[in-house]
Length: 73
Image (tube, rainbow, N blue to C red; front, top):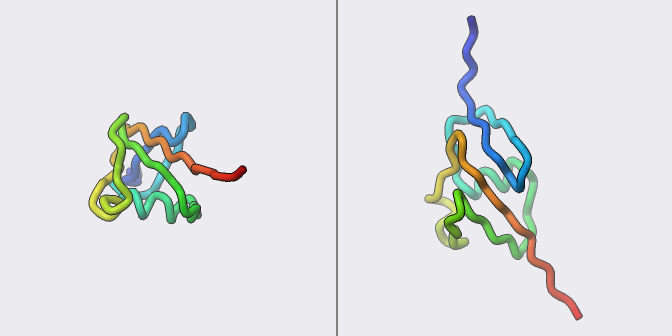
């Protein structure tokens, strides 16, 4: 039996699988190719400040919400 390490998370209500045991928020956004200038991220209901994206990790079973804010008139 071959076991591939990875993680399954809920991202914006959808199940997502990654071939990593954990990712930082920045790595997750990069993996999804999300580069919007105004993104708000929470992990398990806890808001993650943009300056904490390199330290905050997403792990197996986490619930992540990433919202792209838009402004306009």
